[in-house]
View 1 (cartoon, rainbow, N blue to C red):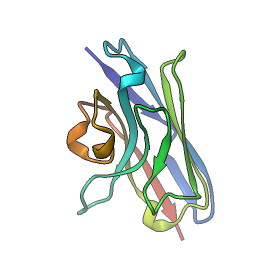
View 2: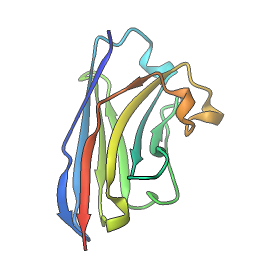
View 3: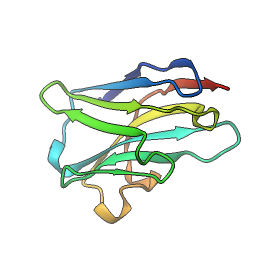
Length: 127
């Protein structure tokens, strides 16, 4: 059974930074053929992808994250990270790491491409 466990959430003031981490154990699929992503979901809103590492190993970002967030991965350690800077109140949400084995690169931002999910970690940004 695959487990993704997030950590690093918390409360910060606007303009602050946080680093989220996700540890993956016993992953039965090729890492390089898997999309890895950080999604977020605010109350009353849909879950949306903020940052993705595609099957080509390249990082991509939603417009809202561009220039402020950095996604990275350490395959040897089975970990995924999201460094977030210049946080704003609208970044407040539950953040989830997700893994999508054999995902379609053109759909790497689509929620349906992801089979495995962590339980989430809360990020709250105050003004």
